[in-house]
Length: 275
Image (tube, rainbow, N blue to C red; front, side, top):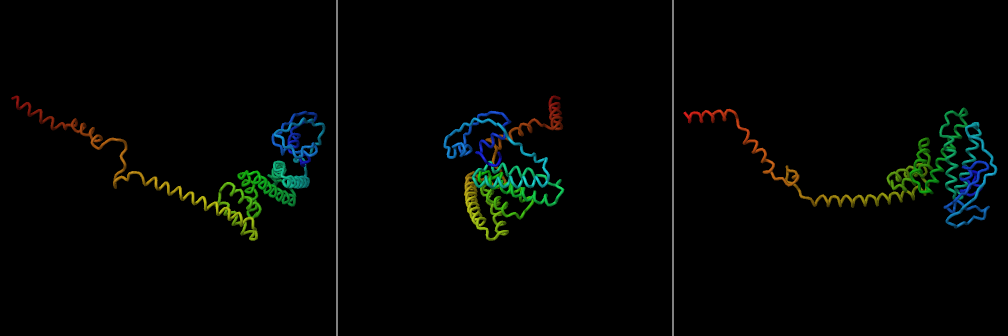
């Protein structure tokens, strides 16, 4: 189990079972149930149901219990199995093998032998780059980009990772970033025809995006030109209030605000008249 010796559905199910356990497995993806040994090589059914029983299994050695040399050897064999599965179109199975190696060597600073550390680093970078290839096939462009970034973080001149990131950027419609990566690939590997072809695709995509943006901007300008233009020094009025209505409260206030001196003079005049 784990080398692709049986179909994907059985490979995945058995990994979750215990010795002596029985299970009914329902598969709704025909390709995952295509098992030649069971006469299901070209199965076309919408649903395939397996009745399973795990009679015996051989437990693999835990990676944490391996020596540095054993870890490198195990990782290399997993990588090779992943490559075979990838070529056979069994993408999810291949992805699982590549992830296993990348996770194994996520931290290698504790390796005592420098030679083993170098080998582990090379294997991790190769599997991260291969993960990107799988994600591109699955059209998961974000994860493809992330896998490439993991490689380029350690090796900025890696042609394969740069090219695959360019492919991911194209899938995400990040045309300017795709163009940047394609130019870098051509700089590092001038005869690379695939990068030159991808560059043309990205440039065409960017041109189309620029055309759409230009049309949108033109429409926005037309819409802005339809509104009333206020006189210089004045802003558009808010609401339906006139200047007279706004000033009215001030007139009332002015009528009520009578100076005390004027009031006193008026009082004296009234007293004089009475006398």
